Length: 208
Image 1 (tube, rainbow, N blue to C red):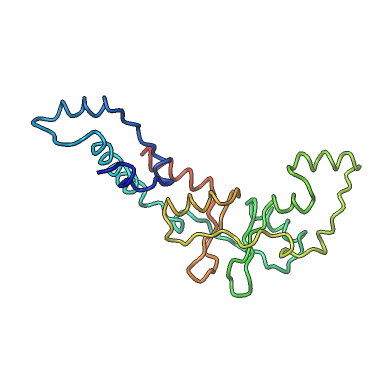
Image 2 (image 1 turned 45 degrees about the horizontal axis):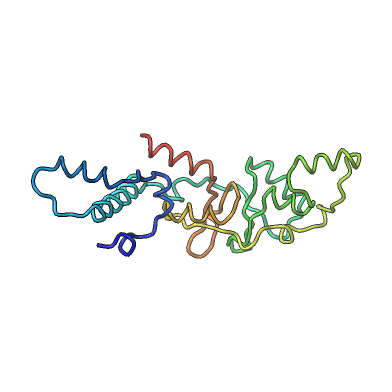
């Protein structure tokens, strides 16, 4: 069995519960403690260990589904809402961003604090604050005349409610946001998955 040919590609779950790299001397020492003759090469032993670790990790974290961890969204943002109203809605929600949905409730984008910074041509809130101080607290941007659709990040990266650890971690890797919409197969909003909730759930499962 060739280790490079047979080993499936590593995934997100393998990083959550990382494997211990086995040296040949570790494997040979383990074989000496097995009664009888063990007809297996160190490469094959290492491959069995890898597959067993992957299976155990998947079993350990099988309950981490996006639908179970997501939070409800009291009010998503319509694309024609003005940015000043959207900012108030985001602040009231307690989140750092909210999904944008069309008339059928399908997710078409995500509006976050980062999107506002981009519109204001600032990299961070500290940079924006310094600019406001330098300009006597004047920031020129007509948020009350700019609709959400012009500032939102689109298309939004979403996951299905039944998405597990690997799919969810892969989705979070594709964007730097703190939250991600959970949508059904038709793209309709089901909830919001916060990165911190997801990571805390992983930590609980691994250490329980």
